[in-house]
Image (cartoon, rainbow, N blue to C red; front, side):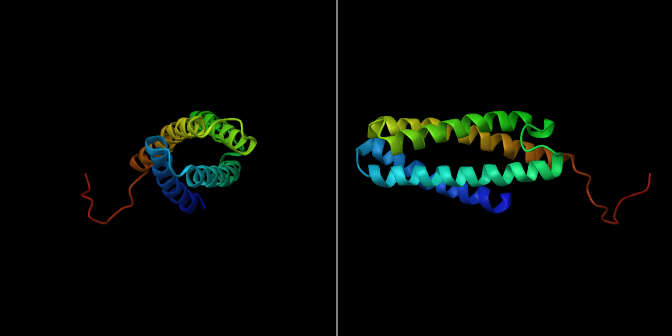
Length: 139
């Protein structure tokens, strides 16, 4: 599931980022940008729930398993910023510019967190034993 949700979330992020930057640059398109951040937040929630279920199945804990402790810690910041955005948007607590700046803060945290997971995946692949090809030379 993560293999599907992660690329979908990243695509939603890229589209939303462009819309948010457009609002900040031109003042136009606030509704589209706001809706895109809400969609991005919902995809984040979906990936966090499915990720927690996977972590429980593999490591016996829903969150903060030693193998993903720091990624999960930073994920909490990402969730907090996205949730703050939802509260501010749906509650009418911030003006459009402030909302977009909050979205950028949430997105910056998301990029750092995504990089953590990509780095962890890369390290795991580099450390994984390679299958025998039959071309090895006996020593």
